[in-house]
Amino acid sequence: MSAAEDPHEAVGAYVLHALPPEEAAAFATHLAGCEACTREVADLEATVACLADAEAVTPPDALRRRVLDRIATTAQEQLRRRVLDRIATTAQEQLLRREPSRRDGPRLDLEV
Image 1 (cartoon, rainbow, N blue to C red):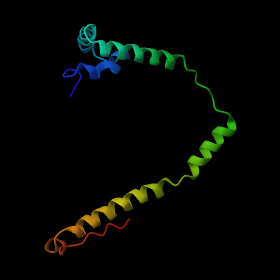
Image 2: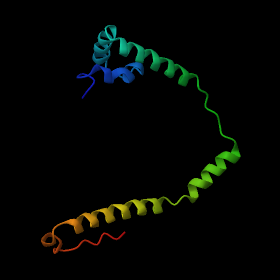
Image 3: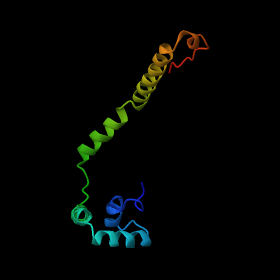
Image 4: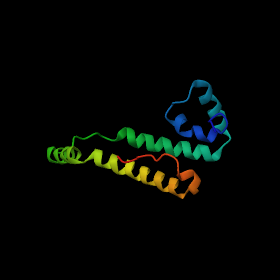
């Protein structure tokens, strides 16, 4: 469902000024008569103001080094392999549950 079909979905985009002008105007009209959206807009505007006041800080060198070292030593390929193995195992289990006449065809080697 789009914001045009359900104006309640446009609250966040409206607060961030991310709606095209015609949708912003339509939402403003909706907002005039919708108490729930009025409250949500107020809450989100307060949150956006807090985020705008947030200050970016540079992490201490030791923390930055630890994080980057951890990233460098985290085996991304092992995680990918585990996920692929899980998918292959599930597929094989589903194939084995089929009726025997359908299992006799060619087998897939899903070993990763």
